[in-house]
Amino acid sequence: MTAVIFEQFAVGPLQCNCIVLGDEASHQALVIDPGDECERIYAVLESHGLRVAGIIATHGHIDHVGAMAQLKERTGAPAMLHEGDVPLYQNLAMQAAWIGIPAPAMTAIDRLVAEGDALSFGTRALRVLHTPGHSPGSISLVLDEKTPTVFSGDTLFAGSVGRTDLWGGSFEALLRSIARKLLTLPDDVTVVPGHGPRTSVGAERRSNPFLQPPA
Image (cartoon, rainbow, N blue to C red; front, side, top):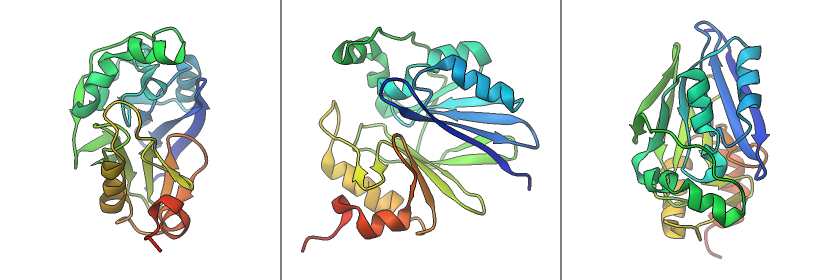
């Protein structure tokens, strides 16, 4: 099988990790978490000659969806989100006011994704895990390749976990999602979080202070 095109770059004032995944054979791509800087995302797509099959957000916070409408308009690709975070997305203007930035354009959500869905790009697909806690509709996305990868959004970070003090957050639900959905993956699975550096399931299982059993 041909290699996966994999581009990761931080966008916007909150430095969200935007991901471009491309299938070399078909030149179809998925864009994960287009939080800002639409022109930069589009330039990465053009540099590889990729056509966007879908635009998927791991959750509805503004730093992960801020450029979704622009990118959809530019590419014609469907916008995808879990149903649990549609209310968050519908309140982008309020989210923008909270952090003091102009409200971005909005678009219709074309596909509501759910646990177990496959999001295809060419001969490949991402597998959807519903991982609520940071927000009600937070998802993680698994790429089952020779070296598997999970895109964990703001559920799990290197050495930390997502905040739960925003609307719809739940620390108990977050830890349950991590334990039941992410820590059940093999140790060698690479974790690409919504912010900050990559890690692995094994590294977080062993050393993440939020995931250790009580003494």
